[in-house]
Image 1 (tube, rainbow, N blue to C red):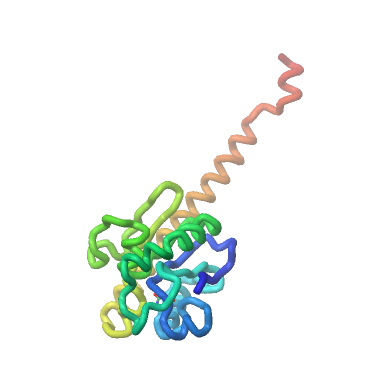
Image 2 (cartoon, helix red, strand yellow):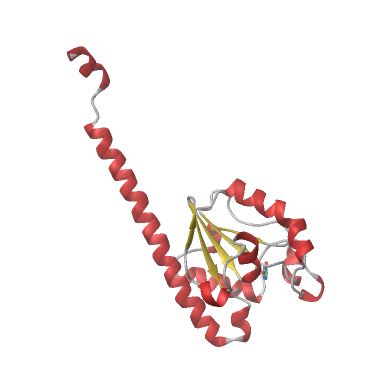
Length: 185
Ligand code: URA
């Protein structure tokens, strides 16, 4: 199952692997975990239509077991290519498999969830997998709180972008107007 979402998305979410519903529909996060993900995104003013959603592993592991390292490895080039094509500013890492794949060597998800990890121009945010909230209500509140932090990170990024545009405008205003200046000199 490939990813799904607009090629122009600035935000990407990466989960674990398709479940049965995803396998049948060919779209990521359309089952119960997907409903939670949609609600979490809407809770911070995002529509899932604006986000590119993908998975660490592209095929459904039998009986929904964890993906095996060889399966993650077999699918790595596909996820890498999706990231390369979409070039998102922010990647939400949904669960420990996505974290292990894209931020290898990081501490466990219980220590780093909700934190931001800047790598070059790209921001990564590890989050609990939405499916975890299906079985543990208190994780739902943790996910909601972490999403509020994501909202703050997005606002910071937007403010930085606006500053950069404004500064570039001021630089332009102060720059000599080529032809006339050269005539004077
Ligand atoms: N869980 C995932 O990790 N991915 C999906 O696409 C659906 C459920």
